[in-house]
Image (cartoon, rainbow, N blue to C red; front, side, top):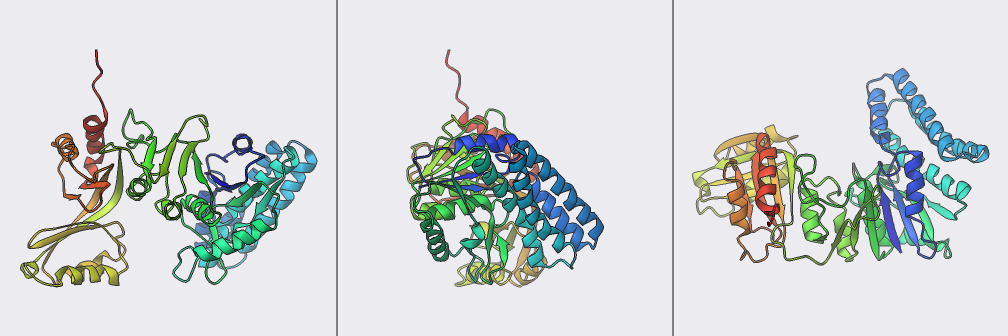
Length: 444
């Protein structure tokens, strides 16, 4: 069994869906294909929900109708046979009827999540119609809402997912091709919920874990995970191989191609994850597994929106339990710490969620002087740093000699050096690192 996930761009048009249909064709191999909503759909659904929250029912209804007509056009393009198109449009309108019904009542949180779930239901319905009615392939649609579930802590319920996915698959013992939705699930109360933005990657990894897959493939519009941010730096290149730990670090610290949580389920069962490009399917992409290479630094990623907090106190010197008391403040306000450094009389740390910052600062001032720096960026350098015998740190700091560094964290992970800079210095830092770490002189 293999699990193949395709993102919104990969299924963003009728032509893209046709291309995906060819990529998944493997009649002798069992495959579960996980689809995101068509590109732009989730943003439109968020817009509709926003209009309903604002009480503008007329605008929300009109926007929903425009979306419905757009999907009818895609259906007619994808399914040129009139009867097949009519059948697909009938199923699409069942989804839109749910949306129109939600515009006729005050929108709740659960109603919003129900609206956001419709994108994946639309894309999978269209795709399955194309496979069965036009290509005449026997593809079974597995409703993700029948087996994807969150527990009481709003975390994926791995045992439930495994049991209920197995039951679904057991109904089709001879079937080789299954289609299902990414992103969407039910919560512990049985209501429709989701795995947040980027959650289709997470769905694929959870499904791969539950199905004991031999491989999970994440198909996007980029040729694997690059060694630096291609939106900022020229001349980046895809990394051919990463360990689970290295990939998890890069995903958490800003690599947009991969959802931060998506590696964990695959890593638990050592299921290889391959990042591939639908626009260039012959490219090798990036393989994520238990193996790693010998490169001291493989890649750089950056995470914006950080707030740095420095607590300076003479009470900290030799004080047992001081850090514990500081951490308790963040625990009370359910705010995670990304990075931390300490000295004898001060501790500096960063957070990426400033929702409760005023309350946190008020409590921290009871410990001593508090300084706050906003608009900070963490730059994460990932590689094989288990034994620093190769001068990697020297290369990093030489490259950044003209960039002011707010914090440095090294040694907390065998795969990560983290640096904190002001966001205005991010582009300069990424370019300097690219020149200092990855570019090699051309030999005459």
